[in-house]
Length: 558
Image (spheres, rainbow, N blue to C red):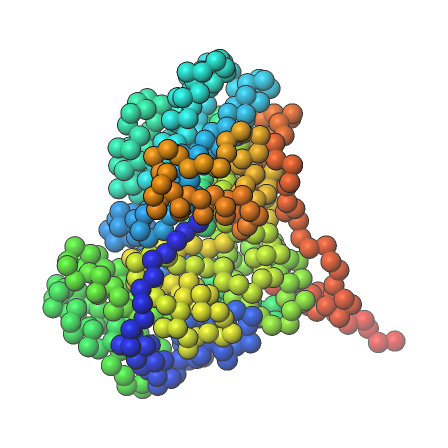
C-alpha cells in the first residue's frame, strides 16, 4: 500500500490552476471532456496538432512510457535511481509497516516451496536455493525473511537448518544507489545475502537462463514498470500518448542562466524546430522541449539547489497518435483483441487504459532464468474485468509534490477528487512515485506461454494461510506508540479482501504435488456473462479493427 503525503491547496495554487486552464484554451488545447470516455479525467491537457504531422511526433517528443521511465529511472535524476525516493515519507508498503511479520509469512510460504522441491527431487541436497527479489526497495523484506530463517534454523525442526544452509537471498535492482542501501541493511547475514544490479524487464541481460533454482519474489514491482497510455475508442481504434514538455516564458528566463550557453542555444533551436513543425503561425510565450532537450535540461540542473523549483516549473501536454507507431503495441492489441472488444462492446463509451509490456517481459524473464521453482508476485491490481471494466483510475502518483485534487479540477471528466489527484503524472516530475494497477490475467496468460503454471491467485491475506503467523499483536518494539496504531490499521487492511493480491506460478516440472495452502482462491478468468446479440455484432466489428482484419466480402448477387 502506498501512502502519499498531501499538501494543502492555497489560494495562489488555485489561481495558477485556473490560469493554466485559460492558457490551454488560448493554445488550442482540447479539454478531455470533449472525448466521450469513461475515465476522461486521465487525459491531461490534450494538444491538437495539424493533420499530417502525427508521424513526426515520435521524432520530437517522448512517448508516455519514455517519459515515465525517464523521470523514474534515469541514472542521474530519476526518482528511484538517484536515491531520492523515501520509503517512509513518500509512501510505505506492507512489508515495511507490518515488519517483520509480513516477511515471516512470506518466509513460511517459500520454506514449503523449498520442501516440496526437495521431496520432488528437483532440488538436490547440496544445490543452492535462491530467493531472487526484484525491486526490493530498501531491503526491508529481505531482512525480515532472513532474520526469520535464522531464528527458525536454531529450533527443533532440522528442515529449517537445511533450508538455511542452502539459502542465498539476492536483491536485484536497477538502482546502484538502492543496492548500496540493501547491502548495508543486510550485511550481518554475510554470504547468505547479496545485492546486484539488474533490470526486472530484461533479466537475461545479467542473469544466465536456467541458472536459478528457487523463488523469484517481488512486492509491488510490476506496478512500477513504465507503461504505454492508450485511448481505445468505442469503434476499436487505438491511439497512444506522447508527452509534450513546455516551460512558460518567465520560467525559462529564470532557468536559462543556470545552464551552459551551448545547451541554451540547443534548447532554443529545438523550440524553433517544434514550432515550425507543429505550431507554425501561433504566437505564444511558451518554450517547447524535445525529448533530448528535456533530458539535457534535467541532467544539467539536478546537482543545483534550484533543481526542485525547476522541475516543478515544467508543464506537460499530451498528444495522441495512432498506435501503429509502436509495432509491439499493435501485436499486444491483436493478441488480446477479443478481451478489449468484449469490454468496448458492452459499454459504448471509449476509455483510457494502460498497457504494461514490462510486466510481460518480467514474467517471460522469470521463466527463462528459473530452472525449477516458483514466481511469487505480491501487488495491487485486478483481472481483465477489473482493469478494463472499472471506471476508477488505474494510474497513480505518490510523493512530496502531490497536490490536492481540485488543483486539476478542470480535467475532471466526471472523476472523483481523489482520482484526479492521483492520476496526474505531471506534478513534480522526478520527485514522485508512479504506479499502475497490475493485470494478473495478463501475467497468467504470458506465463503459461512461457512455461509457468498458475498455482494460486487470491487476496494478499492468503500469505497468512498455513503459516501460524498472526497479526493480532504488534511487535514488542512497536507497542504503545503511533507506529503501533499504524500497524493495527494496516493489519486490518491486510486481512480484508482488497485489491492487494498474491499470485503464485510454478515452473513446469518443479513439483506436481505442491498445493498452495489457502482455501479461498480467486478466478483469473474473464466474466462469463454473455453479450447481447447487438453487443456481439459490435464486438466482432471492434475486434476486426483491433486486429487490422479486413471486413468480410459481401456475398455475390444472384
